[in-house]
Length: 146
Image 1 (cartoon, rainbow, N blue to C red):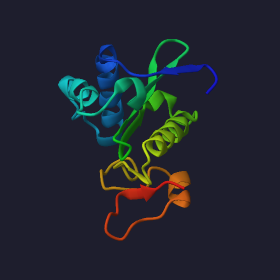
Image 2 (cartoon, helix red, strand yellow):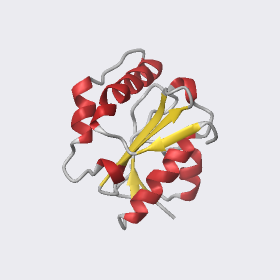
Image 3 (cartoon, one colour):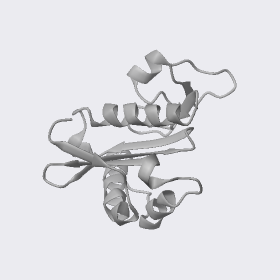
Image 4 (cartoon, rainbow, N blue to C red):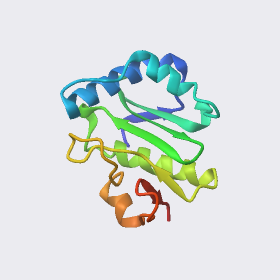
């Protein structure tokens, strides 16, 4: 990701992450449902260690281009600002999340994502992950990491 830098998130990033999420939700759904306190609460999740379980990606101009967190190696959230989609940031964040999950000894990682950008039904994180993953019969939102 040339021209971008990354580092673990801190509570000082909560407002910028909130703005990224609100912009992405508005792009996907026509309105934002996230609230600023929700992001701060996510960064304080039990057993989440921001220095190892979160990553923010900044553009050269200082914009927050994307962010991700992995909770207990099983649950992830990955978001890319609409202005920075298609540049490989989501793929890089997914690679990071998968590796973080592996580091925790997990065989799977789950994230609900929007299908066609308008619904919140569980879908493969992306076609690359879906092609490398298998669905479990009793846990349709889980993806095995290979």
